[in-house]
Length: 215
Image 1 (tube, one colour):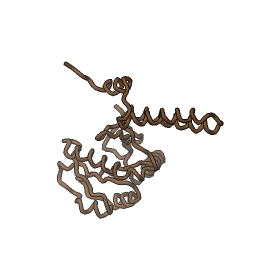
Image 2 (cartoon, rainbow, N blue to C red):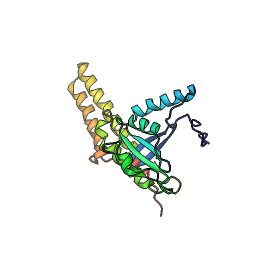
Image 3 (cartoon, helix red, strand yellow):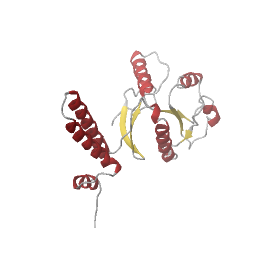
Image 4 (cartoon, rainbow, N blue to C red):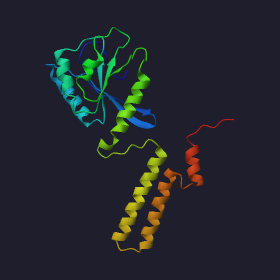
């Protein structure tokens, strides 16, 4: 058991994190405690940490209970999500709907809510698609970070960076340009491993090591 879960608000206070591969992109998912008003000091501190987490997230999934109407407190909290890269998700689509798509859309200019049923798995495939699109469409706004899901590509890029830094260091230290040229050549070869322009036996071994080939 990774967390204690009960129908009582405030039971779950810790973050639960898991890595998922969605259409080739490695995504780190963080499940936080619910947000609501409380007089409990410990719970209030937990909710403060939730807001800190949300403000640093590349994307936020706002999970709503579709079997219950929104309260005034719910509306006040939802209005605080306006500056976040948001995906509203309405759970319990298998029960009588007490929320409407239009009601949730009124809070967000661009985000249309997605109905799902966590119990029966309805809408989960589309949820993954929406998460993928949310991240890819906002890739330029994710603090200059580049998403790399392939370990071989990551290793090649690290080698490229090291070689370029070595070339710069050689030139700054007054070494012969030939030394820098060798480092740049190696950096280009490393990039070629990603683009397919450089193929060696070692690269082929690394590629096929990730496949299970049977007879």
